[in-house]
Figure (cartoon, rainbow, N blue to C red):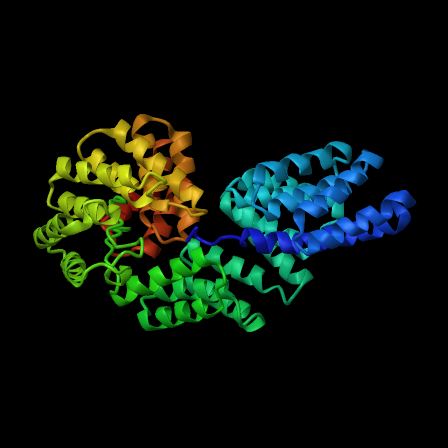
Length: 481
């Protein structure tokens, strides 16, 4: 799940905009502005609400020329750029507001939101802590935002406390219950997660976010039918296309409609072998190509790799030589046949064609290079997979996990720790092996108590995983039990 640990940027900013506008309107009525700038400030706010952003900025620019030492106009210009997803410009203007008034809550909050939206949870948390301190800690939304960031930087105890404070301040805060559910899910407490997410759904029955997490919980509990039903309900309410696609992929995985082999219980060796770019029978190509695609998909689902390679080779010879998804799938099948040089060649062809980024092929390339002993090349591929995913506003916990393994082997324990924790947080517990890998690292740096906790979490999430026997042995050695 980018994994969906927080709110979408547009939704977050809409909520924050209400906070900022309230403050600004009070000022515009005379307590903060000279009478000759009030009309420009009010007109700018009106235009900003109407998303007439260039016109709004023009009004705020007039205010700044007349009163350059008041932070509100800078903050709202920042907000206008955030609406356009021009994050660097938004940050620039929020910081200008804070240069004038360092504890100006709307800019502190908005800066936290845009930083969080770009994956900078630790920086965002700094600004939200300031917000909480300055505002007196009575705003439930601030506690909720801070809790999300705390969860992402592995301050789980404090995250739980802040979710609970948000709920105490606002008993109808459905998102805080969903946040608690995600936290419980990441730690393998499935019953608690199930209870919290159902509270969220009861409070907000049209929450795509909550139903998605319910689906993850039911999937982890091996209740496939209930998981599919929850994901399908999430789709009814989902308005963000990338999240809708994530949900469809989940349904496809559970129903067998997609081809994927994400080995999440072993050492993280997984591939994105599915026809994940929406190219298939429906893409308007010939019936023959459609039949070949379907045959290849079916062969991959059956793990009949040689058969799938024959089908994909035929597809390439019949007009799909420039299709990066077909080439990625071919490489994946070749890798499963241990034809690693051929697989690397196929992945690189796919990446050359899809020059705007192809995280799945980058990850698969990294796995093949790793198996060939080229750790430097594998690390570069995993990092590129992470970067390409980030450009699509997604996460890549599998690549983070593999990056952690490489860094751990190199002796970069700080970097490995960071990568494993990102894998855990980004996956919502869906990559259990990251807990095992983190535990091995913690043992190595003599943090035995923390290692025990991670081994236990791994065994909760993957009691029959490939590393389960080793985890039990290590636990017995560390605890004497």
